[in-house]
Length: 245
Image (cartoon, rainbow, N blue to C red; front, top):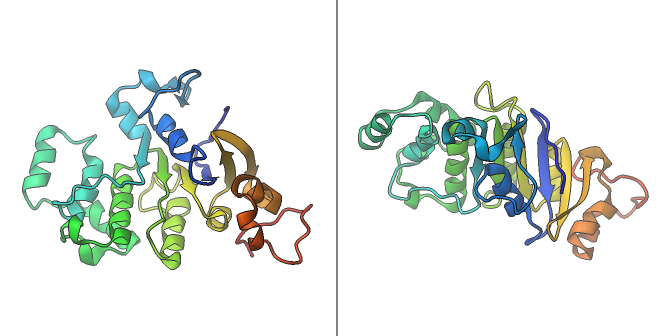
């Protein structure tokens, strides 16, 4: 595939399970290397960057979340700073009640302030997902990659989280950061992202501005099982804007 993401662009990647969405995100994050071709960030080869440079540039929230269950939600969020903190500062943060004020601000945006000092293992799946999002926001990279960021939260909270990621943001950089998120819900993708990429079997099937995505495009990546979401009076030859007024 050939893919170019612009600065500040908000891109939703949709497709059924096994389409290759997670693999694509891991390639962009540098967790796995392409068998051919290259990944470039700001015209620099990803593999040539130091770990610190890569940390400032790109961050990935995994579907598995990768939280430390024994630590509080606050400490897990503050772990997003570990790539820029010294080893001593990181150890002090883990062992002593030294709080980063940004973690509180981020928690307010994600509506988990009341759970900041609870052990992460005691939180619900949706709350843990918000903690993982908070850790990524604390990292504050220029490119935010998210693998199914709202799969474990209720619809209202899913909208709030995507609004934070794609519009406001809890910091000066995050409001201008590029966001690439994999989603199963084309409705949410169309409502919050500027551009939608449809994938199937490791291939980009379509790459369009959100208003141009049609019901036929959606069926191409999901099959007939989703065709019933189309309005009864929709003209299949015209774009159907999923979830937009």
